Length: 488
Image (cartoon, rainbow, N blue to C red; front, side, top):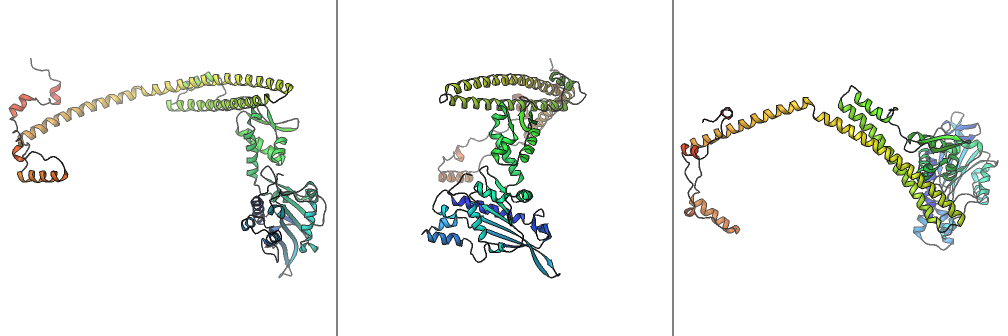
Protein backbone atom coordinates (compact mmCIF):
# COMPACT_ATOMS: atom_id res chain seq x y z
CA UNK A 1 0.00 0.00 0.00
CA UNK A 2 1.04 3.64 -0.47
CA UNK A 3 2.80 4.96 2.60
CA UNK A 4 2.47 8.40 4.13
CA UNK A 5 4.63 10.32 6.57
CA UNK A 6 1.68 12.24 8.07
CA UNK A 7 1.04 10.80 11.58
CA UNK A 8 -2.47 12.29 11.64
CA UNK A 9 -3.55 9.90 8.88
CA UNK A 10 -2.27 6.93 10.88
CA UNK A 11 -4.08 8.24 13.95
CA UNK A 12 -7.34 8.56 11.99
CA UNK A 13 -7.01 4.97 10.75
CA UNK A 14 -6.51 3.76 14.30
CA UNK A 15 -9.57 5.63 15.60
CA UNK A 16 -11.79 4.45 12.75
CA UNK A 17 -10.91 0.81 13.24
CA UNK A 18 -11.44 0.74 17.00
CA UNK A 19 -14.72 2.61 16.73
CA UNK A 20 -15.90 -0.11 14.38
CA UNK A 21 -14.67 -2.89 16.69
CA UNK A 22 -16.59 -1.41 19.61
CA UNK A 23 -19.74 -1.40 17.48
CA UNK A 24 -19.15 -5.04 16.45
CA UNK A 25 -19.12 -6.12 20.11
CA UNK A 26 -22.88 -5.49 20.14
CA UNK A 27 -23.48 -7.64 17.06
CA UNK A 28 -24.97 -11.09 17.72
CA UNK A 29 -23.20 -12.41 14.61
CA UNK A 30 -19.81 -12.09 16.30
CA UNK A 31 -18.84 -15.68 17.08
CA UNK A 32 -15.51 -16.50 18.76
CA UNK A 33 -13.67 -19.66 19.75
CA UNK A 34 -14.13 -20.65 23.40
CA UNK A 35 -13.53 -23.70 25.57
CA UNK A 36 -17.01 -24.87 24.68
CA UNK A 37 -16.61 -24.31 20.93
CA UNK A 38 -17.51 -21.33 18.77
CA UNK A 39 -20.10 -19.21 20.55
CA UNK A 40 -21.84 -15.91 19.93
CA UNK A 41 -20.70 -13.04 22.10
CA UNK A 42 -24.33 -12.50 23.07
CA UNK A 43 -24.38 -15.96 24.70
CA UNK A 44 -21.54 -15.02 27.09
CA UNK A 45 -20.83 -12.42 29.73
CA UNK A 46 -18.19 -10.22 28.02
CA UNK A 47 -15.91 -8.00 30.08
CA UNK A 48 -14.39 -5.22 27.95
CA UNK A 49 -11.13 -3.45 28.86
CA UNK A 50 -9.71 -0.53 26.87
CA UNK A 51 -6.02 0.38 26.92
CA UNK A 52 -2.97 -1.50 28.10
CA UNK A 53 -2.96 -2.43 31.82
CA UNK A 54 -0.46 -0.34 33.79
CA UNK A 55 0.36 1.97 30.85
CA UNK A 56 -1.21 5.39 30.36
CA UNK A 57 -2.68 6.15 26.97
CA UNK A 58 0.07 7.54 24.69
CA UNK A 59 2.76 6.93 27.30
CA UNK A 60 4.91 4.83 24.96
CA UNK A 61 4.88 7.61 22.37
CA UNK A 62 5.89 10.17 24.98
CA UNK A 63 8.80 8.02 26.20
CA UNK A 64 10.08 7.47 22.66
CA UNK A 65 9.94 11.21 21.95
CA UNK A 66 12.06 11.83 25.04
CA UNK A 67 14.60 9.27 23.84
CA UNK A 68 14.74 10.99 20.44
CA UNK A 69 15.03 14.41 22.11
CA UNK A 70 11.78 15.65 20.55
CA UNK A 71 9.58 18.12 22.41
CA UNK A 72 6.92 18.89 19.78
CA UNK A 73 3.57 18.77 21.60
CA UNK A 74 1.61 19.22 18.37
CA UNK A 75 3.38 16.22 16.86
CA UNK A 76 2.61 14.15 19.93
CA UNK A 77 -1.11 14.97 19.68
CA UNK A 78 -1.20 13.83 16.03
CA UNK A 79 0.48 10.49 16.69
CA UNK A 80 -1.38 7.12 16.94
CA UNK A 81 -1.24 5.80 20.50
CA UNK A 82 -1.13 2.04 19.93
CA UNK A 83 -4.67 1.37 21.17
CA UNK A 84 -5.60 -1.90 22.91
CA UNK A 85 -8.95 -3.60 23.53
CA UNK A 86 -9.54 -6.88 25.38
CA UNK A 87 -12.80 -8.77 25.72
CA UNK A 88 -12.90 -11.59 28.24
CA UNK A 89 -15.70 -14.02 27.44
CA UNK A 90 -17.21 -15.64 30.55
CA UNK A 91 -19.97 -18.04 31.50
CA UNK A 92 -21.70 -18.79 34.80
CA UNK A 93 -20.19 -21.45 37.05
CA UNK A 94 -21.96 -22.81 40.14
CA UNK A 95 -24.74 -20.26 39.58
CA UNK A 96 -22.70 -17.46 41.14
CA UNK A 97 -19.19 -17.28 39.74
CA UNK A 98 -18.26 -16.43 36.15
CA UNK A 99 -15.55 -18.54 34.55
CA UNK A 100 -13.45 -17.28 31.55
CA UNK A 101 -13.94 -19.39 28.45
CA UNK A 102 -12.38 -17.24 25.68
CA UNK A 103 -10.68 -14.00 24.80
CA UNK A 104 -10.68 -11.37 22.05
CA UNK A 105 -7.62 -9.15 21.91
CA UNK A 106 -7.43 -6.23 19.45
CA UNK A 107 -4.16 -4.30 19.09
CA UNK A 108 -2.99 -1.40 16.94
CA UNK A 109 0.58 -1.08 15.61
CA UNK A 110 2.26 1.85 13.89
CA UNK A 111 5.88 2.61 12.88
CA UNK A 112 6.11 5.19 15.65
CA UNK A 113 9.79 6.01 15.35
CA UNK A 114 9.59 6.55 11.58
CA UNK A 115 6.57 8.82 11.96
CA UNK A 116 8.28 10.90 14.66
CA UNK A 117 11.33 11.42 12.45
CA UNK A 118 9.29 12.17 9.30
CA UNK A 119 10.44 9.04 7.49
CA UNK A 120 8.45 6.80 5.18
CA UNK A 121 6.32 4.43 7.27
CA UNK A 122 7.29 0.84 6.58
CA UNK A 123 4.80 -2.05 6.68
CA UNK A 124 4.67 -4.43 9.60
CA UNK A 125 7.01 -7.41 9.34
CA UNK A 126 6.68 -10.91 10.92
CA UNK A 127 9.26 -9.95 13.55
CA UNK A 128 7.12 -6.99 14.58
CA UNK A 129 4.06 -9.24 14.94
CA UNK A 130 5.95 -11.80 17.01
CA UNK A 131 7.38 -9.09 19.28
CA UNK A 132 3.94 -7.58 19.75
CA UNK A 133 2.39 -10.93 20.68
CA UNK A 134 5.28 -11.82 23.00
CA UNK A 135 4.64 -8.65 24.99
CA UNK A 136 1.07 -9.71 25.85
CA UNK A 137 1.33 -11.67 29.11
CA UNK A 138 -2.36 -12.60 29.06
CA UNK A 139 -1.73 -14.81 26.02
CA UNK A 140 0.48 -17.15 28.06
CA UNK A 141 -2.47 -19.13 29.47
CA UNK A 142 -4.39 -21.89 27.70
CA UNK A 143 -7.50 -19.76 27.14
CA UNK A 144 -8.64 -19.84 23.47
CA UNK A 145 -7.82 -16.41 22.10
CA UNK A 146 -8.65 -14.54 18.94
CA UNK A 147 -6.00 -11.88 18.28
CA UNK A 148 -6.65 -9.02 15.86
CA UNK A 149 -3.68 -6.87 14.85
CA UNK A 150 -4.35 -3.66 12.91
CA UNK A 151 -1.36 -1.98 11.26
CA UNK A 152 -1.81 1.62 10.15
CA UNK A 153 0.98 1.15 7.59
CA UNK A 154 -0.08 -2.27 6.29
CA UNK A 155 1.71 -5.64 6.30
CA UNK A 156 4.48 -7.17 4.26
CA UNK A 157 3.60 -10.31 2.21
CA UNK A 158 5.53 -12.44 4.71
CA UNK A 159 3.49 -11.03 7.60
CA UNK A 160 0.23 -11.83 5.83
CA UNK A 161 1.22 -15.49 5.70
CA UNK A 162 1.22 -15.61 9.51
CA UNK A 163 -2.52 -15.03 9.58
CA UNK A 164 -3.12 -18.01 7.30
CA UNK A 165 -0.75 -20.37 9.07
CA UNK A 166 -1.86 -22.58 11.93
CA UNK A 167 -0.94 -21.11 15.27
CA UNK A 168 -1.75 -21.46 18.93
CA UNK A 169 -4.15 -18.53 18.72
CA UNK A 170 -6.41 -17.36 15.91
CA UNK A 171 -4.64 -14.42 14.25
CA UNK A 172 -6.45 -11.85 12.11
CA UNK A 173 -4.63 -8.96 10.41
CA UNK A 174 -6.37 -5.73 9.33
CA UNK A 175 -4.90 -2.99 7.15
CA UNK A 176 -6.16 -0.02 5.10
CA UNK A 177 -5.73 -0.37 1.34
CA UNK A 178 -5.00 2.01 -1.51
CA UNK A 179 -8.57 1.78 -2.86
CA UNK A 180 -9.98 3.61 0.16
CA UNK A 181 -11.21 0.53 2.03
CA UNK A 182 -9.82 -2.15 4.30
CA UNK A 183 -8.27 -5.56 3.74
CA UNK A 184 -8.76 -8.24 6.39
CA UNK A 185 -6.45 -11.28 6.38
CA UNK A 186 -7.81 -14.25 8.31
CA UNK A 187 -7.80 -18.05 8.19
CA UNK A 188 -10.36 -19.60 5.86
CA UNK A 189 -12.45 -20.75 8.84
CA UNK A 190 -12.75 -17.14 10.06
CA UNK A 191 -14.24 -15.61 6.89
CA UNK A 192 -17.37 -14.51 8.76
CA UNK A 193 -15.23 -12.83 11.42
CA UNK A 194 -13.16 -11.09 8.75
CA UNK A 195 -16.32 -9.72 7.16
CA UNK A 196 -17.54 -8.36 10.50
CA UNK A 197 -14.21 -6.69 11.27
CA UNK A 198 -14.19 -4.75 7.99
CA UNK A 199 -14.95 -1.11 8.94
CA UNK A 200 -16.19 -0.28 5.45
CA UNK A 201 -19.95 -0.79 5.20
CA UNK A 202 -21.54 -2.69 2.33
CA UNK A 203 -23.10 0.46 0.89
CA UNK A 204 -19.71 2.19 0.82
CA UNK A 205 -18.22 -0.77 -1.08
CA UNK A 206 -20.98 -0.63 -3.66
CA UNK A 207 -20.47 3.09 -4.02
CA UNK A 208 -16.79 2.48 -4.79
CA UNK A 209 -17.85 0.22 -7.67
CA UNK A 210 -20.13 2.95 -9.03
CA UNK A 211 -17.36 5.52 -8.67
CA UNK A 212 -15.11 3.30 -10.75
CA UNK A 213 -17.78 3.01 -13.46
CA UNK A 214 -18.29 6.77 -13.43
CA UNK A 215 -14.55 7.35 -13.91
CA UNK A 216 -14.33 4.76 -16.73
CA UNK A 217 -17.37 5.65 -18.83
CA UNK A 218 -15.29 5.34 -21.99
CA UNK A 219 -14.87 1.62 -21.31
CA UNK A 220 -18.65 1.20 -21.34
CA UNK A 221 -19.19 3.38 -24.42
CA UNK A 222 -16.40 1.85 -26.47
CA UNK A 223 -16.30 -1.68 -25.07
CA UNK A 224 -17.01 -3.46 -21.80
CA UNK A 225 -15.86 -3.86 -18.18
CA UNK A 226 -15.31 -7.22 -16.45
CA UNK A 227 -16.09 -7.78 -12.79
CA UNK A 228 -12.71 -9.34 -12.01
CA UNK A 229 -10.92 -6.26 -13.38
CA UNK A 230 -12.95 -3.94 -11.13
CA UNK A 231 -12.35 -6.24 -8.16
CA UNK A 232 -8.59 -6.09 -8.74
CA UNK A 233 -8.57 -2.30 -8.86
CA UNK A 234 -11.00 -1.63 -6.00
CA UNK A 235 -9.70 -4.50 -3.84
CA UNK A 236 -13.24 -5.70 -3.26
CA UNK A 237 -14.62 -9.25 -3.29
CA UNK A 238 -15.69 -10.38 -6.74
CA UNK A 239 -19.13 -11.32 -5.40
CA UNK A 240 -19.73 -7.75 -4.23
CA UNK A 241 -18.64 -6.33 -7.58
CA UNK A 242 -20.81 -8.74 -9.58
CA UNK A 243 -23.86 -7.95 -7.46
CA UNK A 244 -23.39 -4.21 -7.97
CA UNK A 245 -22.83 -4.57 -11.72
CA UNK A 246 -26.13 -6.42 -12.07
CA UNK A 247 -27.91 -3.72 -10.07
CA UNK A 248 -26.25 -0.99 -12.15
CA UNK A 249 -27.34 -2.65 -15.41
CA UNK A 250 -30.96 -2.80 -14.21
CA UNK A 251 -30.96 0.91 -13.40
CA UNK A 252 -29.19 2.20 -16.51
CA UNK A 253 -31.10 1.78 -19.80
CA UNK A 254 -29.12 0.17 -22.59
CA UNK A 255 -26.65 -1.68 -20.31
CA UNK A 256 -26.45 -5.44 -19.80
CA UNK A 257 -24.48 -7.59 -17.33
CA UNK A 258 -23.96 -11.17 -18.48
CA UNK A 259 -21.44 -13.97 -18.19
CA UNK A 260 -18.96 -13.93 -21.09
CA UNK A 261 -16.22 -16.58 -21.08
CA UNK A 262 -17.01 -17.31 -17.46
CA UNK A 263 -16.66 -13.66 -16.35
CA UNK A 264 -19.50 -11.30 -15.53
CA UNK A 265 -19.17 -8.44 -18.01
CA UNK A 266 -20.97 -5.09 -18.13
CA UNK A 267 -21.45 -3.67 -21.63
CA UNK A 268 -23.80 -1.49 -23.66
CA UNK A 269 -26.31 -3.33 -25.82
CA UNK A 270 -27.00 -0.32 -28.00
CA UNK A 271 -26.78 3.45 -28.08
CA UNK A 272 -29.61 5.48 -26.56
CA UNK A 273 -31.80 2.46 -25.82
CA UNK A 274 -34.42 3.31 -23.23
CA UNK A 275 -37.82 2.22 -22.02
CA UNK A 276 -40.50 3.98 -24.05
CA UNK A 277 -43.21 3.61 -21.48
CA UNK A 278 -44.60 0.36 -22.83
CA UNK A 279 -45.25 1.61 -26.37
CA UNK A 280 -43.75 -1.29 -28.29
CA UNK A 281 -45.48 -0.44 -31.59
CA UNK A 282 -43.77 1.73 -34.24
CA UNK A 283 -43.36 5.37 -33.30
CA UNK A 284 -45.88 6.94 -35.66
CA UNK A 285 -48.48 4.25 -34.94
CA UNK A 286 -48.12 4.93 -31.22
CA UNK A 287 -48.72 8.66 -31.78
CA UNK A 288 -51.80 7.93 -33.90
CA UNK A 289 -53.14 5.53 -31.27
CA UNK A 290 -53.00 8.30 -28.67
CA UNK A 291 -55.25 10.52 -30.81
CA UNK A 292 -57.70 7.67 -31.37
CA UNK A 293 -58.13 6.99 -27.65
CA UNK A 294 -61.48 8.03 -26.18
CA UNK A 295 -60.11 10.10 -23.32
CA UNK A 296 -59.65 13.74 -22.37
CA UNK A 297 -57.16 16.00 -24.04
CA UNK A 298 -55.29 16.33 -20.74
CA UNK A 299 -54.66 12.58 -20.64
CA UNK A 300 -53.46 12.56 -24.23
CA UNK A 301 -51.07 15.45 -23.54
CA UNK A 302 -49.73 13.57 -20.49
CA UNK A 303 -49.04 10.45 -22.60
CA UNK A 304 -47.23 12.48 -25.23
CA UNK A 305 -45.23 14.34 -22.57
CA UNK A 306 -44.06 11.02 -21.11
CA UNK A 307 -42.96 9.85 -24.55
CA UNK A 308 -41.12 13.13 -25.07
CA UNK A 309 -39.35 12.78 -21.69
CA UNK A 310 -38.16 9.31 -22.69
CA UNK A 311 -36.77 10.61 -25.99
CA UNK A 312 -35.12 13.54 -24.21
CA UNK A 313 -33.35 11.12 -21.88
CA UNK A 314 -32.10 9.13 -24.87
CA UNK A 315 -30.84 12.32 -26.48
CA UNK A 316 -28.93 13.33 -23.34
CA UNK A 317 -27.28 9.91 -23.16
CA UNK A 318 -26.25 10.22 -26.80
CA UNK A 319 -24.63 13.59 -26.09
CA UNK A 320 -22.83 12.11 -23.07
CA UNK A 321 -21.52 9.23 -25.16
CA UNK A 322 -20.30 11.60 -27.85
CA UNK A 323 -18.50 13.66 -25.18
CA UNK A 324 -16.79 10.50 -23.90
CA UNK A 325 -15.65 9.54 -27.40
CA UNK A 326 -14.37 13.07 -28.04
CA UNK A 327 -12.36 13.02 -24.80
CA UNK A 328 -10.84 9.71 -25.84
CA UNK A 329 -9.88 11.17 -29.20
CA UNK A 330 -8.30 14.16 -27.47
CA UNK A 331 -6.22 11.86 -25.26
CA UNK A 332 -5.02 9.85 -28.25
CA UNK A 333 -4.14 13.03 -30.12
CA UNK A 334 -1.92 14.17 -27.25
CA UNK A 335 -0.13 10.79 -27.17
CA UNK A 336 0.46 10.79 -30.93
CA UNK A 337 3.51 13.11 -30.91
CA UNK A 338 5.47 11.10 -28.34
CA UNK A 339 4.59 7.65 -29.72
CA UNK A 340 6.56 5.37 -31.97
CA UNK A 341 5.68 4.91 -35.63
CA UNK A 342 3.82 1.68 -34.92
CA UNK A 343 1.93 3.24 -32.04
CA UNK A 344 1.06 6.26 -34.19
CA UNK A 345 -0.53 3.98 -36.77
CA UNK A 346 -2.56 2.30 -34.04
CA UNK A 347 -3.64 5.70 -32.69
CA UNK A 348 -4.67 6.91 -36.16
CA UNK A 349 -6.72 3.74 -36.72
CA UNK A 350 -8.45 4.10 -33.36
CA UNK A 351 -9.23 7.78 -33.98
CA UNK A 352 -10.76 6.83 -37.35
CA UNK A 353 -13.05 4.34 -35.62
CA UNK A 354 -13.95 6.91 -32.98
CA UNK A 355 -15.01 9.46 -35.57
CA UNK A 356 -17.17 6.91 -37.36
CA UNK A 357 -18.73 6.09 -34.00
CA UNK A 358 -19.54 9.78 -33.49
CA UNK A 359 -21.18 9.96 -36.94
CA UNK A 360 -23.39 6.98 -36.09
CA UNK A 361 -24.49 8.60 -32.84
CA UNK A 362 -25.21 11.88 -34.62
CA UNK A 363 -27.54 10.00 -36.97
CA UNK A 364 -29.37 8.62 -33.95
CA UNK A 365 -29.60 12.16 -32.55
CA UNK A 366 -31.14 13.37 -35.81
CA UNK A 367 -33.83 10.69 -35.60
CA UNK A 368 -34.56 11.52 -31.96
CA UNK A 369 -34.85 15.25 -32.74
CA UNK A 370 -37.39 14.52 -35.48
CA UNK A 371 -39.44 12.37 -33.10
CA UNK A 372 -39.40 15.11 -30.48
CA UNK A 373 -40.55 17.62 -33.09
CA UNK A 374 -43.48 15.37 -34.06
CA UNK A 375 -44.53 15.01 -30.44
CA UNK A 376 -44.22 18.77 -29.79
CA UNK A 377 -46.49 19.42 -32.78
CA UNK A 378 -49.01 16.88 -31.50
CA UNK A 379 -49.04 18.44 -28.04
CA UNK A 380 -49.47 21.89 -29.56
CA UNK A 381 -52.42 20.65 -31.65
CA UNK A 382 -54.16 19.18 -28.62
CA UNK A 383 -53.60 22.30 -26.52
CA UNK A 384 -54.82 24.58 -29.34
CA UNK A 385 -57.91 22.41 -29.82
CA UNK A 386 -58.52 22.62 -26.10
CA UNK A 387 -58.30 26.43 -26.18
CA UNK A 388 -60.86 26.85 -29.01
CA UNK A 389 -63.36 24.38 -27.59
CA UNK A 390 -66.92 25.64 -28.34
CA UNK A 391 -67.98 25.18 -24.73
CA UNK A 392 -65.16 27.44 -23.53
CA UNK A 393 -65.91 30.04 -26.22
CA UNK A 394 -69.57 30.09 -25.06
CA UNK A 395 -68.35 31.03 -21.58
CA UNK A 396 -66.39 33.91 -23.11
CA UNK A 397 -69.59 35.19 -24.79
CA UNK A 398 -71.36 35.22 -21.44
CA UNK A 399 -68.46 37.14 -19.94
CA UNK A 400 -68.67 39.72 -22.76
CA UNK A 401 -72.41 40.27 -22.11
CA UNK A 402 -71.76 40.69 -18.40
CA UNK A 403 -69.02 43.24 -19.14
CA UNK A 404 -71.37 45.32 -21.30
CA UNK A 405 -74.02 45.38 -18.57
CA UNK A 406 -71.43 46.51 -16.03
CA UNK A 407 -70.33 49.39 -18.27
CA UNK A 408 -73.95 50.51 -18.73
CA UNK A 409 -74.51 50.44 -14.98
CA UNK A 410 -71.41 52.51 -14.32
CA UNK A 411 -72.52 55.15 -16.86
CA UNK A 412 -75.97 55.44 -15.23
CA UNK A 413 -74.37 55.75 -11.79
CA UNK A 414 -72.08 58.54 -13.03
CA UNK A 415 -75.08 60.50 -14.36
CA UNK A 416 -76.97 60.14 -11.08
CA UNK A 417 -73.90 61.28 -9.12
CA UNK A 418 -73.54 64.45 -11.22
CA UNK A 419 -77.22 65.27 -10.82
CA UNK A 420 -76.95 64.84 -7.04
CA UNK A 421 -73.99 67.25 -6.84
CA UNK A 422 -75.81 69.87 -8.91
CA UNK A 423 -78.93 69.73 -6.76
CA UNK A 424 -76.91 70.11 -3.53
CA UNK A 425 -74.88 73.09 -4.85
CA UNK A 426 -71.58 71.52 -3.89
CA UNK A 427 -68.61 73.58 -5.13
CA UNK A 428 -65.17 74.78 -4.25
CA UNK A 429 -64.84 76.85 -1.08
CA UNK A 430 -62.38 79.58 -0.18
CA UNK A 431 -59.69 79.01 2.45
CA UNK A 432 -60.10 81.25 5.51
CA UNK A 433 -57.56 84.08 5.82
CA UNK A 434 -56.17 82.91 9.17
CA UNK A 435 -55.72 79.39 7.90
CA UNK A 436 -54.01 80.71 4.76
CA UNK A 437 -51.64 82.81 6.88
CA UNK A 438 -50.62 79.82 8.99
CA UNK A 439 -49.98 77.74 5.87
CA UNK A 440 -47.75 80.47 4.44
CA UNK A 441 -45.85 80.68 7.72
CA UNK A 442 -45.25 76.93 7.85
CA UNK A 443 -44.20 76.78 4.23
CA UNK A 444 -41.76 79.61 4.82
CA UNK A 445 -40.11 77.68 7.65
CA UNK A 446 -39.95 74.59 5.43
CA UNK A 447 -38.19 76.60 2.69
CA UNK A 448 -41.01 76.42 0.12
CA UNK A 449 -42.62 79.25 -1.80
CA UNK A 450 -45.60 80.76 0.00
CA UNK A 451 -48.88 80.56 -1.79
CA UNK A 452 -50.92 83.51 -2.80
CA UNK A 453 -52.66 85.28 0.04
CA UNK A 454 -56.31 85.08 0.53
CA UNK A 455 -56.74 88.43 -1.29
CA UNK A 456 -55.00 87.02 -4.38
CA UNK A 457 -56.98 83.81 -4.46
CA UNK A 458 -59.28 83.76 -7.37
CA UNK A 459 -62.72 83.02 -6.00
CA UNK A 460 -64.15 79.77 -7.27
CA UNK A 461 -66.82 80.05 -9.86
CA UNK A 462 -70.32 79.41 -8.76
CA UNK A 463 -71.93 76.23 -9.92
CA UNK A 464 -73.62 76.64 -13.26
CA UNK A 465 -77.32 76.24 -13.56
CA UNK A 466 -78.71 72.85 -14.58
CA UNK A 467 -79.79 74.32 -17.94
CA UNK A 468 -76.24 75.57 -18.67
CA UNK A 469 -74.67 72.25 -17.65
CA UNK A 470 -76.91 70.43 -20.03
CA UNK A 471 -76.03 72.82 -22.81
CA UNK A 472 -72.26 72.56 -22.34
CA UNK A 473 -71.81 68.75 -21.79
CA UNK A 474 -74.79 66.47 -22.13
CA UNK A 475 -74.73 63.48 -19.74
CA UNK A 476 -74.21 59.92 -20.87
CA UNK A 477 -77.46 58.29 -22.00
CA UNK A 478 -79.13 55.67 -19.86
CA UNK A 479 -78.71 52.00 -20.92
CA UNK A 480 -82.19 51.87 -22.45
CA UNK A 481 -81.56 55.05 -24.41
CA UNK A 482 -78.49 53.65 -26.22
CA UNK A 483 -80.50 51.46 -28.50
CA UNK A 484 -83.05 54.24 -29.41
CA UNK A 485 -82.30 56.06 -32.65
CA UNK A 486 -81.71 59.81 -32.51
CA UNK A 487 -84.55 62.08 -33.49
CA UNK A 488 -84.32 63.36 -37.03
